[in-house]
Image (cartoon, rainbow, N blue to C red; front, side):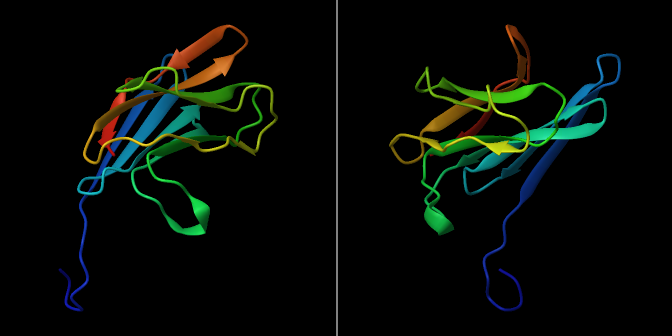
Length: 137
């Protein structure tokens, strides 16, 4: 708690860059809330993000949902896939020009369920993917 009695949260941030391939990523997780984001970079330019939202938020944002955004007009799109516990859940910007926000891909999960999601830069049949990062419902 801070001096005003408001609850405080720890944030984990990890920055990874593959200098040789010109691609990098950023991972951020609110450690006690379950929500997290993965950001992608292409040749040092911020390219897009996947956001996992554990609980319903403001403005109609659903809980147990993820979304991707592509902000860099480089011909690559952003695509996120849930690896576990449910396979086949995908949010993508394929077929759209930057800047584009996918719909929220949502589905009810039991509270506290660990989720693993992977973010990929996609172009045609080519993809360059992050590791699968985790949060919880």
